[in-house]
Image (cartoon, rainbow, N blue to C red):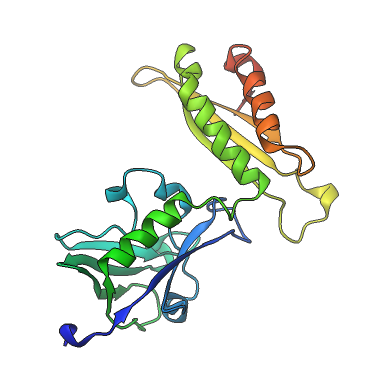
Amino acid sequence: MGDQLAISTLTLRHIIPVDWAADPWAEVRPLIDGVDVLREVHPEGVAHSCRHWTGPAGSWPLAAAEEPRRVMVTEPVCTAGCCGALYVTLRREDDQVIWDGWENTSDSAALPPDFRFDAAQYETELARAAADRGWEEPVDTAARLLGQALVESGWFERWGCVLTDVSPRRAEPGMPEELTSPEGVDVEFQRVRGPGERTERYGYELFVSRDRPVEEQVRQLAARILADDPRKTAEKR
């Protein structure tokens, strides 16, 4: 039956979350032949965010190889263990990629059909989506560039700390402007302690304007952080 499947086309779309409490980064949503078939069977599900698409091609969430791989394609904003998730098995057979072996652990018993893709088109689309920056808002660009600058600096290691997260902070949906923090970037790091010692966590709440060049703002934010011991200038949490 699998040999009779028509060849489908995969398209990956970046979608900025409305409720970003679970993950502020855009999800990379798979569309098949232009249709969000996953939404039809798992409406509460969210796809992997773009932060999972930054490593080598073989590590991307939808990367397919000859060895079959079970992948969680959507999960709720809580956890898969709480409300269930949607899984598929990916594998490459010669010049095609196959999605089958679906499993839906949510309350819905619905499953998508199996799909077959042209491997060249499939891999080109994965590479395109991983490199795509056109969807970014200023806070996304600032978080990405600032994260790169801080990692490359090695600054936190100098002070016995480790950088744990750099992420965009969006305006709270539905909240009056005066009751929510301005958009910006949150930076989190922690002090490296010995076994059995309490972990000390720190953070910066930085602001990003839509009215100024993002690269200029990132240079200023990085300079502010790199000017002194971060344990003195950041907020202890």
